[in-house]
Structure formats: structure tokens, C-alpha cells
Length: 191
Image (cartoon, rainbow, N blue to C red; front, side, top):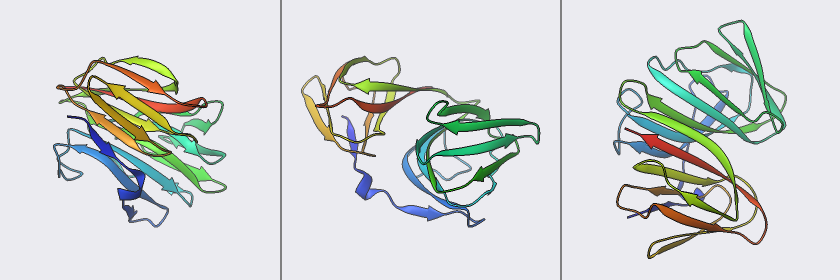
């Protein structure tokens, strides 16, 4: 059975370095700690420049969903700017990452434990037809507008920053309808 995760139910946890906060959207297994999860999906708000936490053995994907841009320096050498033109980055969790921001940004964050599972993150645009590729799929409405997700006998109305977690028992084909074009982030989780 699909799990609807409304944005208003997400709770922000401040970072230890004071540079932002994270709202956990979903984690597996449920209730796992940051040291035990197989996969974790969250929404992070960066309010000040500073280092990212290190997550050895974790593969990460970030996608900018709000704000102008964030510049990331990986291992002191590689500089990448996440912006509307280049909104996504994949990197290993053990990389030393330093963020530079001029204003507040919000990033969609996917982390998978490398020896247990992997993920694929992509941006799709509703309205569209979605054919699932994995046993677990998370849909996240990244833009304005509402999206109606329909699969099998299930139907969910999602607004901005709402998520829908689909498991192995849910339909493989879904229809995402919207009155206006709306960006939806789709995460396939492979175990």
C-alpha cells in the first residue's frame, strides 16, 4: 500500500554546525538511525556556508529545489554549482564537501548505503505516465501546483513538497495528472 507523506508532517532537525536543517521524508528500515539506514530521503535547507557531514559508504544525490544556487567544493578540488541550469549532483558520502551559499537554498537529498542498495534520481514533469523500475519508488512534488497520482485502485492528491512512497505491492504503472506542468522528483530504490 502506498504511503502519502504530506509536507506539513515533516519536522526540521537543526544541523550540529548551525548551517541549516533537515526534514526526513522517508528512511528504510523505518526508524533507522543515521548509522543504520539502508536508504534515506530528506529535504535540507542550507542557510549558511560550511561543511557537509561525512557519510562513509553512502552514495548521495542532491537536487536543488528552492533558492538561486549553491556552490559545492568536493575534496578541495572539484567545484560544482547547483542551479536551475544544473540542479543535480551525485557524489560519494565520504567526500569532503564544502557548501557556499549567498541565500537560503533547499535541496532534495537521497542517500543509499553502497553495500546494501542503490538509487536513481530523476526529474519528470507531470502530467505524464510513470512505469516503475524498482520495488520501492518515492515521488516528490518539487514545484508549484497539484499532482494527482493514480495507480491501480489508489489515488493521491499531492501538493508542493508532498511525497508518495510506493512499495512492491503497489501498481507498476501510475498516471500523474496536473492542470499545469509540475516538476516531480522520482527516486527508484534498488535493493
